[in-house]
Length: 394
Image (cartoon, rainbow, N blue to C red; front, side, top):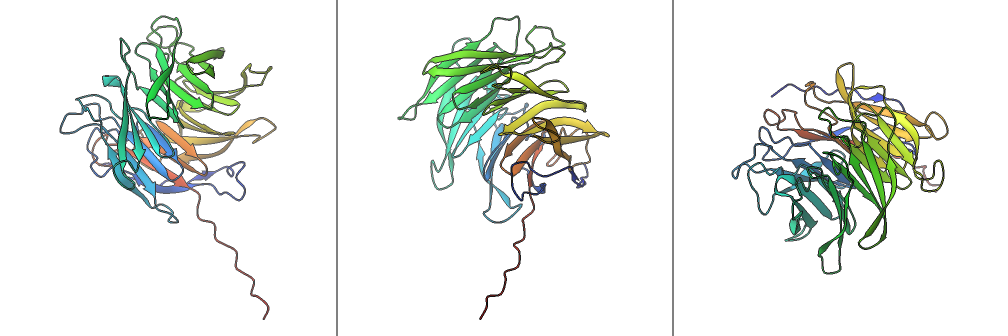
């Protein structure tokens, strides 16, 4: 196991739009109770309020050492007290099935992708007992779909699933009986594309990334697409997103309200729905200038954007940007979080998730429980001390 150091936090500001918020610091390292070498825990992470899920796809998994996803919950009122509450396993586990390659949590529901079996599993809280996470559904890609579950995004009763091996993405909707019904099958006609590499949902819109749309093994400019729901079974293309000079645009996508953030190799592009006209999704910001794999992971909430993958002076970081920071409509850097490990190959920032004033960053090649066992890191703002009470007059 490599030695660790807790690096100081470089502060460049406060969370925008969060009155009295403070810059977060490392609160917890998330390592599964049964973590083992090559788990690659932190390949994907997702956060919803006080619950985090961390994927551990273990590319060399076996029946005795299956891939998994770990669920952690924060103890109320105790900063940094994140405890493991569940280890999620596939109901039909198989060697090298990559269960946990993608994870998404929304409230009391979690989706976990299993792309080498073309499955997505949905778990629900309190199913099987208080605070238990039981499997509620298994969704199969079917037909000739390959890589189904490489990417997932869950919001309420809707689920988006990417299958980039065959260049497709799908949307499912849950009915009153708890059945997940396919509402859309999306694709584009290009050669050997990776449409579905990344997906995200927000309300009646879904965003899909296609980072290798030209079919060349070295990658291409990339693109992303925004679709809008008209009715069940009817999703229309609203806009194709692209940028001249981009490289692999679409390797990460997040949509929130009127904004879409799209990661590329070395850059993140931010599009606004009404820039250049209603529903035109015009480009409003290009973030970059950082070496490494800046842009391989993004998490967008409102007008705050968390980006993973970049390196500064040989240290990988996660970066938070805010709109109107540094000028009207500008996306300025709020702060950056350096990797808390001394290992430059832990790939801190490979995955990121932002919710409120908390965030989680994945480092799938950290040696927390053996080589490449991986870890997730939770950051929280320090507890704000209450001002002293004025003594009451007698």
